[in-house]
Structure formats: C-alpha cells, structure tokens
Image (cartoon, rainbow, N blue to C red; front, side):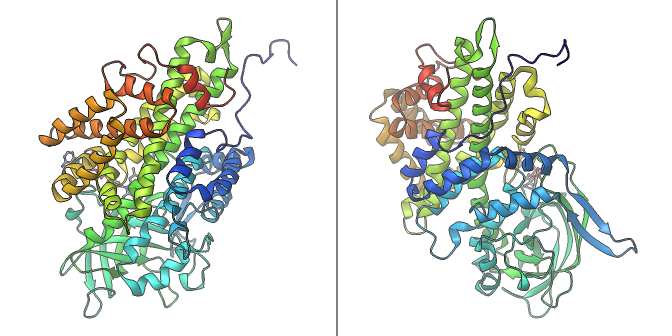
Length: 547
Ligand SMILES: Cc1cc2nc3c(=O)[nH]c(=O)nc-3n(C[C@H](O)[C@H](O)[C@H](O)COP(=O)(O)OP(=O)(O)OC[C@H]3O[C@@H](n4cnc5c(N)ncnc54)[C@H](O)[C@@H]3O)c2cc1C
C-alpha cells in the first residue's frame, strides 16, 4: 500500500443484507394488511435486492442509458430503443417476482395488491427505472377490461409473469408489457386539451380500429408491446389500445422522435412519439376515455406511493448504515445525539409511509367486494400520493447529507436516489392535481370522508394528540377551498399516518410521530425532533444492530 493511502474509518458498502428481515415495519405491515402468505417470497426478494450482483445490474442499467435507433443504415424507420442487457435482466426478474400484473393473474390470492406494494418498497434497492414499465403493465389491466375482446388477447400476456423483450407481434409472445400515452405538449394534467385525433376505420365505436394522428410528449417505456392512449374520436375524447405491431405482422407506424434527457433514472427510456395514421383500437365507450384511463391512473398512483415509500426506506438504511460505521470527534456518528435525532426522524417518515402505502394497497385488494374499502381507496389514493411523494426529495437530501461528501458521490447510490426522488410527485398527476382530486372526492364521494374519518377516530380514542389533530382536520374538511387544499391534504395525510402508527406500531414510534408531526413540537427539517423522543427505539427499528 502506498504510504499516503491508508483507508480507515470508512464503512463497508451495505450489501448482502436481507432487506425484508431488516425491515420490521414492512413485514409487520404485510402481515397486518392481509398478505402474510407472501412473506416467504418477499424474503427471497429482500435477499435478491440485497445481493451485490443485482445491485450492480441496477448500476449498469443506469450507467448505460437506452439508445434510440430511429432509422436503419438505409434510411428505413426503426423506432426502436436498445437497452443494456442488465435492464432486461432486471425486467425479467421483476416480472417473474410479481412486480408487474401478478395481482390480476387467475387464482391470485387475496392480499395480492398488498404483496405487490411490498415488492415495490424493496425493489428500489436495485433500480427504480424498471418500476415504470412494471407499474404500467399492472395498472393497464382494469382499464383493458372495459373492452373484453381486447382484454382476452392482451390480459393473459400481461399477467403471465414472463418478460419477453422480443420486438415482435404479441400473438407469438409469452408475455407483454404496457405503457401509456396521455400527456401532450400543450397539456399533461389537463388531458382534455389533447389534440390527437382518431378517425374510425369503419363504423367506429368500442373495440373498433381507428387511425390516430398527433403527438405524445411523454411516453415512457416505448418498447412496450402496447400503450393506452387518449385521442379525440368523433364522439369525444376516447381511450385506445395502440400496439407496436399490427395483427398482420407489420409494424404500427409509431415514430419515436426523441428520448427525454431526464433528471432521474437512466435505465428506463421516456420518449416523444408521433402518431401518423397509427392504428389504435377503442377501449370502452366513445367519449369516455378519461373515465376508462382513470382506472389505470388510479393503480399507477398506488405504485407512486409504494415506490416512494421504498425510496424513503432506502435513504434511511443507507444513512443509518453509514452513521454506524463512521466515526467523527471520537465516536460513531450513530452514537451522537444530534445524528441519532436525524436518523430517527428519517426512519419515522419511512415507517409512516410504509404503513400508509400498504393500508392503501389493502383497499385496492378489497375495493371490488367492499364499498367501504372502495370509498377509502377513492379518498386516500390522492392524499397518500401527494404526501408520501412530496416527502421523498427532502428525505433523500437529508439521507444523502448523513453520508457527508461520500453521499454526494455517484458510487454511493445516493445521487441516483436523490435525482429519482421528485419523479413520483410529478408523474400521474402532480401535487396540486392530487390536492384538487381530494376536493373532488369530498364532493362526489362524501362517504369516503366518513369512512376514512371513522378509521382515524377509532385510533384517536387512545391518543389525545391524534384526537386534537382530527378536530383540526374536521375544521379543514368543513371549509375546503382550492387555495387551502394543500393544507387540508397535508393535515389529512399526517392524521392518517398517525392513526396507523397509533393503532399498530410500537409505542415509541407512534409517540414520536404524534409529538413531531401533529403538534407544534417538531421543526421543519428532519432531525428537529421534540425532547423526549426515544431515538434509540426508532433506530433499533430502522436497522437492527445499530449501536
Ligand atoms: C419521467 C417522466 C415520465 C413520464 N411518463 C409519462 C408517460 O409514460 N405517459 C404519459 O402520458 N405521461 C408521462 N409523463 C408526463 C406526466 O404525467 C406529466 O408531466 C404530468 O402529468 C404533468 O403534466 P404537465 O407536464 O403537462 O404539467 P402541467 O399540467 O402543465 O402542470 C404544471 C404544474 O401546474 C400544476 N397545475 C396543473 N393544473 C393546476 C390547477 N388547476 N391548479 C393548480 N395547479 C395546477 C401541476 O400540479 C404542475 O405542478 C411523464 C413525466 C415524467 C417526468
């Protein structure tokens, strides 16, 4: 070793861990929300995502971004995206392990949406880009079912658990993945501003082929086998299934103009697409496109919550691990009171997010058979999507800071997490859009307020700070306004998270959450916890074996 180059006081990389076994909050939530049967499989996935060889694949897939091939050397259009082999390996294992459409597979057990949400909490340890196509392949199914003849062809290939990357007609493929194309240049949130047109090939109507002309400004995972797209049909904005290949074995004309130079993951591609006489088949009723695609949107929003909960967990464990192995001023950082307060607070956010994500997933599991769960899902989806995603960037920044300069360096993985962290807040309805959706749900589905409130009130009986916060929420609910919608939704999210922790988490966790989030005891930055919080109990829960 060179005389100047001794390496001391640097923690080893955190690899080879069983990520489920070390996450008590996650495994408890899985069992509580009705997916205890999935724990062995989740354990295997937890070990896989802790395995350095899979983490290396995640690194490779992001270090070698997808390449767009618009034309071949003779000038023929190709419109293909080439990915690094690691991306395909990650996709194959993600699909096989149930991250895609597994809850819709015939015979899927009750609790399948909860089990899948837990997989989403684990998966970001290797890569977040592969979550996008997995999500869309999951979320497309309920929308597809609006058109049974199309669902008969496509759904079995979505749920098969086989990732088949061949760029070929779907009829010969073992599995299919899906994307969605709503956003256009002039409007993303406001999809009714879509200008893409759809001309019927024959008489038109549900299930009929139409020629689509227009553009889509964001279309992720463009090598998916098919997309749900919105376009203006003669009878109004409608939903279409747009395959990459046509039934006669030729390519559907679908021009990939550019790949986005994105802030976040590089493993997955997001593209700009032109439709020029592109064939699409109408899904559901003509003029009801928004209602049809909202099914897909709603399920995607659940994934935004569970994926963001995964980011919070990842940031927490990386920060805690580093602080345990790094000394400063004569003691490990994880033994020093101020760092313990920061780590404890990061964990608190992560545990609250996990609890909310999995409770929400249970509502997705049960909504078909239980109107109260359907009502819960309606209101809590935008609340959780707003708040958990909103917390992710601040949390990632704080976790990164716990590693000091090392956290700013790409090899630590924290920069990847940090760049990715704002995505779920934007995608599938950004923050304000979620808040406006909460106001809409309150008006159109008042029973959802009653159901959610009743669940919170049950926990509030045991915790006066929660009872007081519920009264504040009641005041907000009584006088909602557009300008005040963020305040209302934030209060609702905190009260919901607190109610879950009061009902189910160890007392030290519930107490710390109520003390720091419900009253005026906590500060604005992570780590500004009120006196009396049991940081040791929180740290032990964050990462077993912490000093
Ligand atoms: C990496 C990535 C991948 C994506 N992939 C896809 C994809 O595959 N398919 C797809 O269709 N789209 C995709 N999108 C697009 C994404 O869904 C949109 O960007 C998003 O819905 C917001 O739309 P917009 O960009 O047009 O913003 P705008 O609609 O212009 O919104 C801008 C801001 O205004 C706010 N706002 C909007 N309306 C109101 C209001 N009434 N009151 C107050 N504030 C308001 C929004 O919250 C937002 O903060 C992707 C985006 C990203 C970043």
